[in-house]
Image (cartoon, rainbow, N blue to C red; front, side):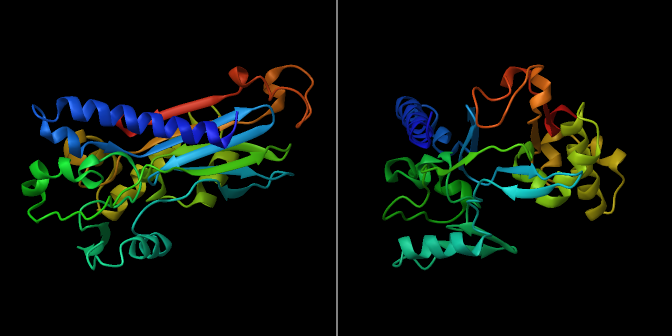
Amino acid sequence: MSCRVLKEAFKATEDEFLTVVDENWHIRPQIASVGSCCLVGVISGSNLYIANVGDSRVVLGTGKRGRVGAVRLSEDHNAAVAEVRDELKAQHPDDSNIVVLKHGVWRVKGIIQVSRSIGDLYLKKPEFKREVVSRFGMPLILKRPVLSAEPALYERVLIAEDRFLIFASDGLWDQITDQEACKFVQRNPQIGIARKLVQVALERAAKKREMRYSVMREIEPGVRRYFHDDISVIVVHLDPKLCGVPFQWGHGPLIGLPNAFIDIFSSNNL
């Protein structure tokens, strides 16, 4: 396993989706505007490999003696990040509208917040942009691709102090800081922890809208998008004792990962 393998997997995924769009675009042109963030984590031996496009995020909770610190292991490819805007401007010096502040939100070409994704081919391939112009009510002029499927890559050797990983879509991180999420996971039981994180995020989103959490839960999923972004959470606990056999970090296979405690929850299930 290596970061190169993950990079090749992302390219293969993008290429396969391009094939699907190319074969179906003439009957379903809207497929060219379908896209997604992608966040992948792989543990092999004592090594952790991370790859991502978009603004889903993975945070490592690490520490000892009951204290835990948050270490962000992925990059947020979102135009809200100044470095991302600078990168886009450097790549498109002849395009004054490569990033636009629209209703208080930075967007690439005034359309999309993320700068990297799988899909969204209308912003990568000029031949796919014609049918989606009217959807956004503005001409879409592409001299070159404005989005990329190139993943950010990260590799780390896990140590005994590394406790857990929190993988989540940006809907969680819009409401909770990295450190808050790690403290919450550290202080609460493992069972159902992903669902509890989602609930905390929804409670905060409801408070911002000056409504009760119970009221927000009753809102239809399609309408709820106006109140908060989609929230999906996976928590992976890196506890060597879960394997049930003696273990030392850096020696032999990692904790028998199938025995590691993994908790998954999405706001779509509410």
